[in-house]
Image (cartoon, rainbow, N blue to C red; front, side):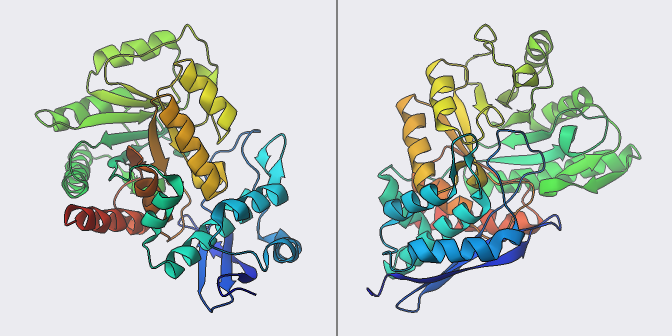
Length: 375
């Protein structure tokens, strides 16, 4: 057995940021290197989401994975990911057992990066053959919609960064403080929601966006919205005309029903697909090719393997699409997504607010930015 061969794979349950559990994979190589990673999980699910099997299936899947992967060279990421896709692939859903699949793929990438004495982002960059870059941040400040039950119908109201990571994080923290003072002044009960966002129990989305515009006035920052398909064409056009500071809209199509007549391509407006795609590479290519979206959200538990993330990157770049790497509402403590985003040259990173468990990726991105700036 080669020193970089996989010696064994084990699984454990991993508590996530919201208190639910997911699957974590531990990979050990013959030379003693071992690493772990885990699968983040979203809050809402659809029938086309890749399927998570949960920790209850661990023993059966552990035996299967060790049967096919023990002895494989951890430095051959693409070949290993192909084996993973053959184990967990599902014709209808893309992946059945995506929680196990992505955890193993990321843990193997971590082992390989240690062996090669590379930071994880540089290892992924070598695999992707893309130009690495430091993405801008897309930070969730106000929560509502399907994630939180309040008067605000929009799931996420975000700051769309345009400066250095350090400067934009500082701006987001100041904006949070301004909103907290605003809510206190108006005697509005507020709690910390999913992704660390502020969730006020009053104020509708128009009132909140209006306040956002006042705060962002005289800055070069813009507003990002995760619409989750709540507005029809008329309502969406009205919203965009009323608030020209909106620079990013995610899943804008009403009930996610796509019509090629529903185009909102204003200058410099990012129109992102997330629930539209669910990691489906054929849909990604179709929607970008037909100008239905001009950017795409990449999530670990949608794309399933490091190699699949790289394939999605190639498709997006082929059609001049922007890439937004995103954490999930139920997150792990790992900083994997920030490494991946830099390695594939993503345009934006969608992390939630820079608080609580989210700081693992924010801080990692800060250090990578500092490292790259000093080269």
